[in-house]
Amino acid sequence: MQEFYPEEKTKMTIREVTFPSADDDDDNNSFRLHGSLKLPSSETSSSSSSSLQKIAAVLIVNGSGPIDRHGNVRMPSSSYNIMSLFANMDLNTSNMMSDFLVHHKGIASLTYDKRGIGKSVSHNNKDANIYYKAGVSDLVSDAVQAYKFLVTSEIERLDVNHIFLLGHSEGAILLPLILQQLKQTNEEAATAAAAAEQQSMPLPRGLIFLCGFGECIRDVTGHQRETLVKEVQEQHGIKGWLLRQILTKERLERQYQDTLKKINDRPNSDYLSTYLGMIKQPAKWMREHLALEDLRTELSQVNVHCLAVAGGNDCQVRSEFCQTEVAQELVPQAASLETYILPHLTHVLRSMKDRPCQLLDATTEYPRLAKLPLDSELLSIVGKWCHRIMKEEESESNK
Image 1: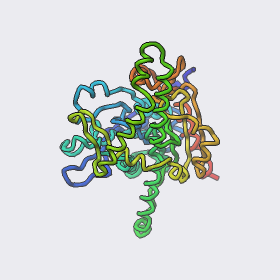
Image 2: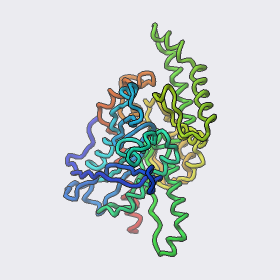
Image 3: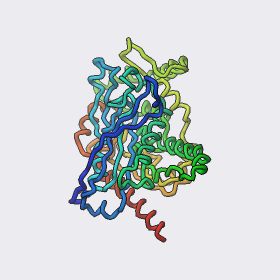
Image 4: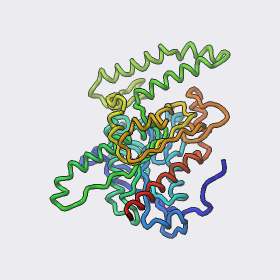
């Protein structure tokens, strides 16, 4: 595929930013979130950005796991053991997406380290397990805090009425919850705002779902177990025979149920620690995800513009929810809806055309794919969609 990027690149300014987490207070356990705000330079001559008096922004919400602001897997400091040496992985999904938006579309971006990851640690790093203690509610609230930072920081040229939320993988699952909490925040502040004659906080202009639209974690993990068993059955030779003795449907289901039992047997524990602390599981995170059921209620309340993109070569989530008819049923109140299923797109937002991407090979395939740029068609879709929404609304306001 030929490159679609414009010949002229917008210059970029990167700012290190920090803002309160949802739990931030004055005690010793408080902490702030740290991230990178990328802005198109005011000196740019790019036609794509100079045509807009103000600049839009995209807040990127990363997928599950210990992900930093760049979209890289970084085990928290409490996991310093031999296993962490193999768990870290440079994917740069958020880094490449944000660079593209600034350089080629003149759109600002904010990415941040998850709580407990990178620089987003507790005061004096006293709570080394803060990442493992985080639940869905914490992740959602932290994303809301990041959005509030964009809206209230009075960043020069930033159009607070044109901020988009982009979620990848679990981040996409969280988008309707983030929007829901932002609406609740406005409702709770409505009386006080009226008394002070202040306007309510502008809501996101649109949601961008990448490889995570329409499914909850319960369904995703079930699909992954089924996929793994199918892949094992298709393996040949001694390797296939050995895998079929180990990775059976019954064993995978038993392990999953055993994990659920451990989590439910300790309802007040935010995380579980086994094997002398070498293995930690985020119990609160799992409980809160399972409580979400199928997300249909949350998605049905989304009333902003929506873009959903799935990968036809994604071994982690299903793509059928991005079929137009299915997607329309999921977000019936969306201001507008565009969906795409890119046949070669994998879960790490790169294309793999020569063979199917398999869960069995993910630990070797993902690092290889990470050396490639993000899929150019995906980037084109995201960039053009953002500009189209902005221009359509600008046209409407001028009528």
